[in-house]
Length: 337
Image (tube, rainbow, N blue to C red):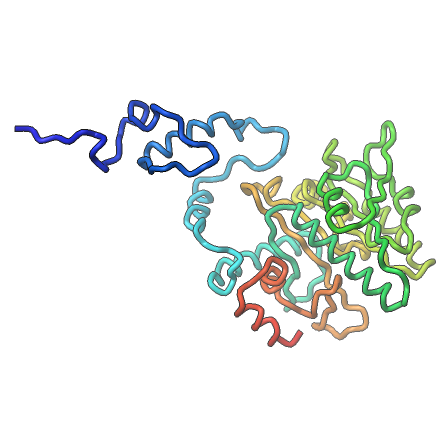
């Protein structure tokens, strides 16, 4: 005799998802259901709803990487359960980030000695990198103004009207006036002469774009640098440049290696770049690189700009910028900055 139980009395997963009782009535959209459903049914319901998303391989609007080699995907899945920001627990992952930071820094001609490591941090994209960079420029400007006994409550930043929207978010979130150079017919990037003319004693930096969101065009970073050099000499200011190389940072070094836009220019103090655009990595990964300054210091004793302590390794910068474990903070305090 065949023994059987009614499907409603068993806890065995129902294999025929579409014919199961779990699709007879709608599941609540914004509340937890009273009863659980089999994992197969939950998977099928969510997977079917995700079919209404766009196809990433057909996405030409946000210019992010949508394909990687199978081996890369295997590495991603092998590490997907790691709490990456806990850098004490996952030191090898941290070391891999350090290597990436240094590779990119050398690609961008960072002035590093043989025994020096680059200063930078991995982020979830260029938007986060820009927030960190903007805050650093603001803090440096504020501290200098305080030391001079001058007002420090009205910082501004000079950009072109073609900047990506994250710059507007930075200005709004962190109370910085956004001074935009207007575009004109036939010239759809920031004009260097107009940009430097807008710089005043309250300008924390000039943001130049290497790869405009509108048309992919590179702004003339070298011309901006040369004009700032003259203005800083005349005024005694230290207005620097941040290069938003989210789109062009992994293009220019290979297609236009002679183009001077990076740390070869003395007033370029920090750069952001998106790995998930032309770095050929899935979203989201970006990097922020910082110039090491050595004015008046012996070799091997660099001074980090933007209020970062001296010769802190890249992984500790990441730890302190992104939030770290209690142990990492204790380690940071003990190190001879």
